[in-house]
Length: 216
Image 1 (cartoon, rainbow, N blue to C red):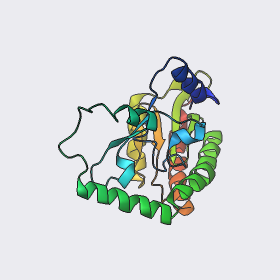
Image 2 (cartoon, one colour):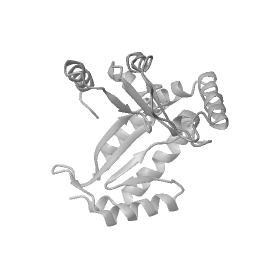
Image 3 (cartoon, helix red, strand yellow):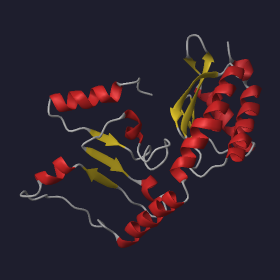
């Protein structure tokens, strides 16, 4: 996670040197971090925003770029030499509209913030206190991660073979995990309930407990 004020500093540098600031919200956008876009929590506005799957929950492949007024007006009297075969595909556009309407009507972004920053984050931090394998917990909303280490002081990454074993045990226990290097990405659906989170946390605690002997 960037430290407090970091993104504002990046925005200021971009403005000072006339650099276009492009933020990738493909994974972080549309409720995942507990706000419509992750950058909103940093108090800045980029010039371009790339987005994709989250915009329609992946029902139909879609991606796009949100363009600021300043960039858009550049093309008022200039030709934009760009385009894709399937740009503005009616089915993809309909899926986007329906998904965004459902997200607003059902308070899905609010749920991601409430659950993600509440019972999920609190549960992961409690797990970190109990498990000697957890070197760090970080994230926002329902976009969290556990960093597993063999030495909490030195932050030595847990070996790939051990991570594979843990992933296998989690799967066997009924929890589909997203493991990258020595991290378990905890990214449940934005619609997840507190009860479902507690069930998942219970599985994590049980499985990590079986591997506690790997810690120094």
